[in-house]
Length: 271
Image 1 (cartoon, rainbow, N blue to C red):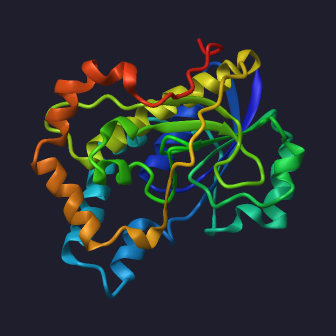
Image 2 (cartoon, rainbow, N blue to C red; image 1 turned 120 degrees about the vertical axis):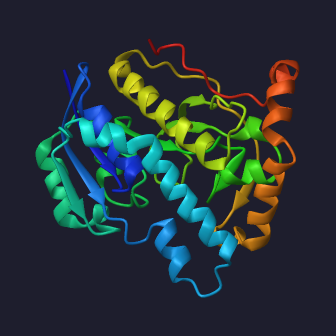
């Protein structure tokens, strides 16, 4: 049974992630290093003087939706990941890196930590997994599932599993998924349902690790967004799209367009 160390954050979504993985029957999580939420989207938004009421409402509703999706599981399931809470950015500290190396895991599984710039990348080459919430290379940077919604294209919402390399979300793609979308959905329900699907898929990838196949990689210059790009105007467009029926239009048309959707990686080695 493979030994896993998780590198993640400590918001509701990250607690759900590490708890679910730590209860797998197919591998053993021997440790998780969880950066605190001192730089969370909510805290950054509330501390920024320029934040509009709409932006504040956006992050508060995001937080509530995470509680609705994940808190029941978190509160009723034992976290067996041996979680260690560390400061934001400390995932690259020499003491943390040494502790991870001492645990001698077979695989490192990353989700939602700071950018890795330590020698762990070399030491765990081809054994260091990451998930990017967004479909690479079509959307890169920050907010890569919010921006497809702002741009009116729910077909470009998804998650990308990849090997970590020394670039930012540039590693070889292992597998990609799109979310299920239902009537009544909003940005947060779509995002959190995707996170639940992502977590189960991540567990599948780890369990199937020895059978993972190399797949054709998507090619695109893509669209790149920075944190500062998401402002009040972008937030207005986002919610206006939902009021004007972006979900209904997607559900009504997805079967017609599915053969024309941009290519994503589907790994044939997963069970």
